[in-house]
Length: 447
Ligand code: SF4
Ligand code: SF4
Image (cartoon, rainbow, N blue to C red; front, side, top):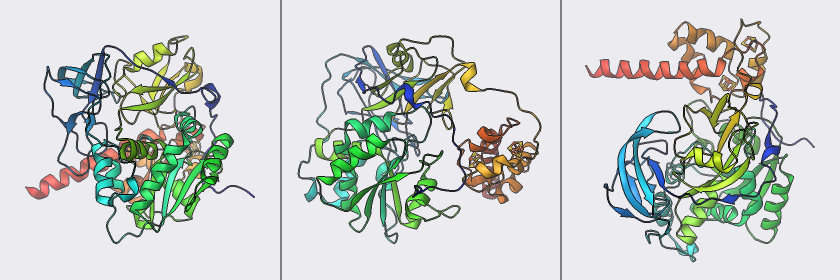
């Protein structure tokens, strides 16, 4: 029987063999670690330390009063040596706190372990998740305590752990499922306490049979309403809307949220961090990163403290075999092209991908030949060639009425286009154009 999936999508070369079988290496950097105050969707944090302060692992460096935000925590012990704007992984200059690692790795006792987590009230679980700085670790970085607080009239029927990891080249989630399945399942069990009527589902693409077996083996020794659901291998299977459709058959209407159709989706690393925070009292201070690509000498999966320099991680992999044409934060489909590798890793850094000119296929675009491949591949049922035209003409209102704001920037249209049209980029520009027009209208309305 075919495995469940969604309509549209593509099958790019997966590049996963470079790090698929590499066990996660733990790295402890020396020297300076740098922490941007905005590592999540929502309000950025403001520093709560000052130059010269000594900080411990897990101590807050930045926080915000806003509900949609998450604190930034020190991942090493040491002295705060600088608070100033620095370049971040996105290429933007943002306020960062720099800490000189003293190599002592002393922990703050800010979060307490709760081995008896079953007795915790939902409110207390959500408080711990927030204080631990947990956000969507798959790259979306939406604060997890907010995601787990849907409006009271939304009945959550499915809690889905996203182990699809459909982005080519990346293996951080796969390695976590293979090497540490228990905290992932434990984190899901904690979330099911918040939504006792929900079914727990761990969704994994069919190209990870060992992870599927490992998770199923772990579940066979437990009782509870959790199952593993293998899915067809197709990009972007791990995108939230596609995964929800594949698992439940529910389509999320434009402008609606997963909770509106009874779903909450968490990345495997997010679930694991929930367990570590609630049960062990360990906040988000490190993450697994796949450092990979055809010009990385010895690609690896590395667990490193947040704030570690990208250059250091690349050096740990033996450096570049030739100058890269492109270095991306994330995978080749949805990753961000980096302007510099002298920037720190953050909560959403799932991969560092360095590609040669051969592998990055950065060709020049030509005229549309009206083949329709972009339309067939679009998982959001959009017409990318029309959206592209509208954006190039700056007709943002029409772009919006053609559904352009529903674009998830997955890159399928660009990948499938024989004319190499920059379709994803024009959609991105179109969305930015609509947002700018809305802001302008709002400020005119206020007078
Ligand atoms: S980038 Fe946007 S328009 Fe292109 S395939 Fe993905 S969702 Fe569709
Ligand atoms: S895939 Fe490219 S060439 Fe084909 S219709 Fe779409 S934009 Fe035009």
